[in-house]
Every structure is written in C-alpha cells, then in structure tokens.
Length: 161
Ligand code: SME
Image (cartoon, rainbow, N blue to C red; front, side, top):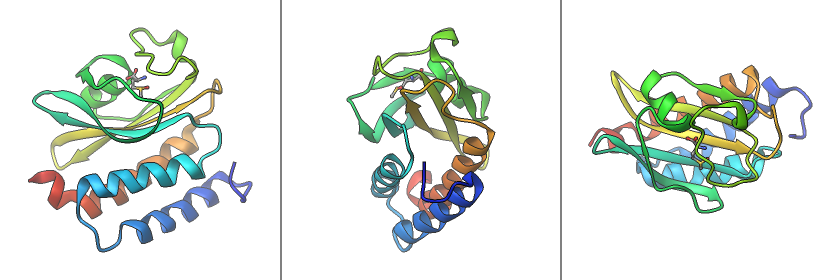
C-alpha cells in the first residue's frame, strides 16, 4: 500500500499525480501508457495494469504493464468485456469464481475493471489485476473511477477522433 494508510487519501494524492502527468498532453495512447506505468508502480500487489480500447466492436489491448496479455476480448466476454457491455465497473474478489474469466496471467486472483465512457460511448476499459484474492474494494473502485475520469478529460479529443 501507499505511504498513507488511508485509501481515500492515497487515491486523492494519486489523482493529483496523474493530473500532473497528463497535463498538457492529449494523445490517448501516450496518456494511457504513462497512466499504466504510474498505477502499476504506485498500487501495491498488482501484477497487471492496462488499457483495452474498443475497436471494430471488440476490445483490443493497449498500453499496459505486466505480462503479455490476451490481445482481443469480445464484448460480454471475461471481466473486461462484461464491464464494457454493462457500462459500469466490475470488482471481482475471486477470479476463479467469475464465470468466463479470461486468465492472461495465471497468478491473477482478483480484478477491477473500469469502463471508459465518453458521452454515450464506451471507448474501452482500464483493467487492474492482483495476485491477492480480494485486493480491490469499493474504495479502490471509486478511486480508480476518479483516475479514469482524469484520463478521459485529458485524452477525450484523441479518443473521439
Ligand atoms: N482477466 C481479464 C482479461 C484481461 S487480462 O487479465 C490482462 C478478463 O477476464 O477480462
């Protein structure tokens, strides 16, 4: 975990750091790359952090940190496809208990997926994996949704093109 024991405080600080990192840059891929790196190195006990972007009706892996991942995920498939289709975040405390979970790294035990929504459109997802069961809770969900909002605000021009 972070230097601060309080998770809300931690995400507040991370949000400030992310805002600084993305400020002045609109390129959606560049911002996704730096955001993945920031999260991967700031969050404790994560083994994969990255983006999938919706392209031609399916999710295609984007900038990420961790082991190589599945390249394409159909809408409605796995945790990522489920979150994209449902248009809300999905927290999975135990991936082995999630029907249809797609195992990219066998070490992953819990997962948090936040959809990227611009206006009416889902443009992708942010996916976080942990080797620890139950790693992500409601505070992580809310915190990561805030971080995604910062990413979308900074990158929306590039994403809508
Ligand atoms: N576990 C995800 C697939 C993506 S990887 O974890 C990087 C899923 O079930 O959608």
